Length: 191
Image (tube, rainbow, N blue to C red):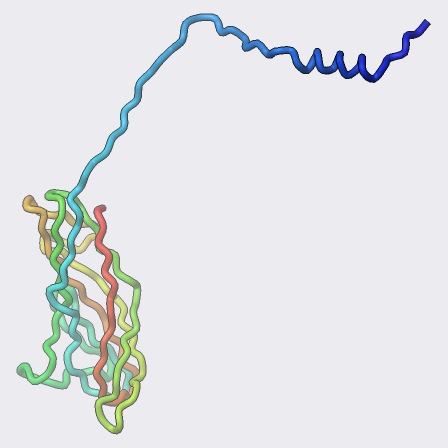
């Protein structure tokens, strides 16, 4: 004869099985311990200060497009229809941008420059207004502490260096007389 399973009895059996306490499996052997370390290095921050801006000087407008290049070493070059408008200091002198950098003595650092920037200008004659934008590219830096170009340079024993930046200004044909300016972001990080 079959005994009927009553719901109350079934629930009590299930609760008894579910309510059994779990016992962890005992590991054989002894416990092991270890220690670790945390490390940190405090480094003197890099400080960069602008000494001079990149200056392309005064340039004649021409019927032909051209370029003006100022090297990080100060070398000056004109191509196409671009030519110097002034002699003997009558206009803005040409020179590379110059920056000083200080930080942790002996550490290397890297200068990051954009591939190109756009100079904006204001027309100086004939009622003013905005001048056509000009591209500046070929931005490159050279360190005073480095014998050659490269991309990473080293601070000297006092934690100092200087670097210069040059670039190329592109002039389209038939530019009006104008004054131009552009901001060049310069990022310096430890290398």
